[in-house]
Length: 168
Image 1 (cartoon, helix red, strand yellow):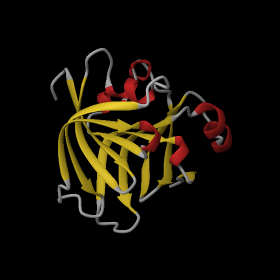
Image 2 (cartoon, one colour):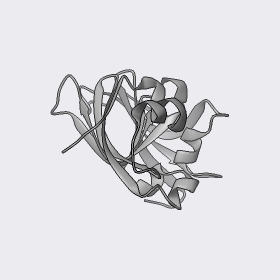
Image 3 (cartoon, helix red, strand yellow):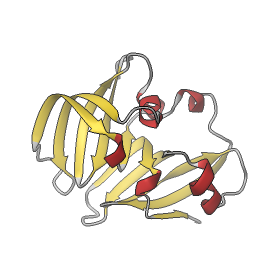
C-alpha cells in the first residue's frame, strides 16, 4: 500500500463502497473517529450491493461518505485502521467479540487495558463513536457465503444491535 493512500471498504444501508482515502494530514482511522467532521472524502469509489459484491453499480472519481450512516469500515492492513494513539498500544487484554449491524454479523478481537470486559460499561462510556476490532470477519446475514475479512473494522457503536463476547 502506498504511504499516502489507504484503500478501504465502507458499508452502509446495504451497500459496499470500495474507495481510496488520501492521507494528507492524518490517517483514515483518525478521520473516521474525528467527531468534528461528518464526511470522509473518497477517491475512485466503487459502489456495489452487499448481496452481489462483484456487481459494480456505480463509479465516482471523487465522493463523500457520510459517517452518520456508516455501519462499519474495513481495512486490509491493521495500520490503516488504527488511530495514531492506538498504534502505540491497544491494551494487553484481548476479547473475542461477536456483534451485529444492519445486514452483517461481525466477529473480531477487541483489545482493552482492563482484564475484564463489562459490555454495558464498555458500550455506554468507553467505546466512543466507533469500536475498533482486529482480525475481522464480516458475514452477510442474508447470505453467509458473502463475507469480507480484514485487519481492522471500525464499527459504528450506534449501529450495533447485538454485542457479545465469544467464549470458546
